[in-house]
Length: 282
Image 1 (cartoon, one colour):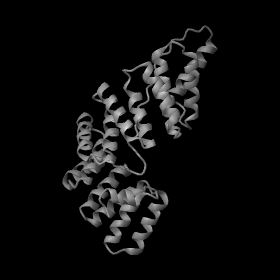
Image 2 (cartoon, rainbow, N blue to C red; image 1 turned 45 degrees about the horizontal axis):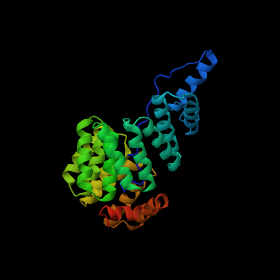
Image 3 (tube, rainbow, N blue to C red; image 1 turned 45 degrees about the vertical axis):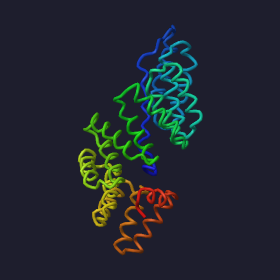
Image 4 (cartoon, rainbow, N blue to C red; image 1 turned 60 degrees about the vertical axis):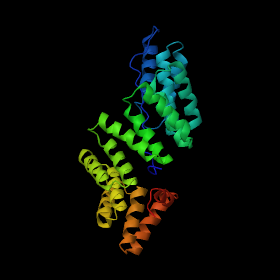
């Protein structure tokens, strides 16, 4: 598993830019426009306003295929946020049936399948999204993370190479490739990628966590601890950083402090030790 909390679950909601308002009253127009805003995710207080807005649009837009496809996709995203994956998949199915050339619901359904643990179905959906839109960076990253989970590290790196080439000016792609390169033992390449990720996103805890992991894999304990400290300064409950720092401290002979960090990591994610073992850190 790439991380305890899957940061690569990038949905790709679509804004409903226009609605065919075949209504006469200003009050009715105002109601529909309010639902458009909600379905587009204007109210981020919880997923419920988006579900409500999209549901009202679905009721009102009887034959507007494009609006319906977007509304089902966006409501599916809200259901995914609630971990109601079966409801989300039903909505993505409807969106795809309405517009089979619409790449986002394929990607987003892949996210829901991955969270359910159905990795082969997730890969098929990410494949479909990328076939429809070869420049779909989020789908490339999502597929890379599933490939990492399946142990296909060369396939993951190929996807991440594509993502970095498409969008070299954001830190996410560099950070993801840093992590993947560290897993396969390419310490030099991993550190170069993480350095670029940190340059682009100096307040991103995950990038320091990834570089700490790269140092951990190359047995550079002090440098690993320094980066895990930085990551935890930005996100004090990041379990991968807690566990990595604890592991490095144990290697340095700092038993009490190391065990404390590892216990804190396990309290957040009881599977963290197995996940690190799967990454080659025993």
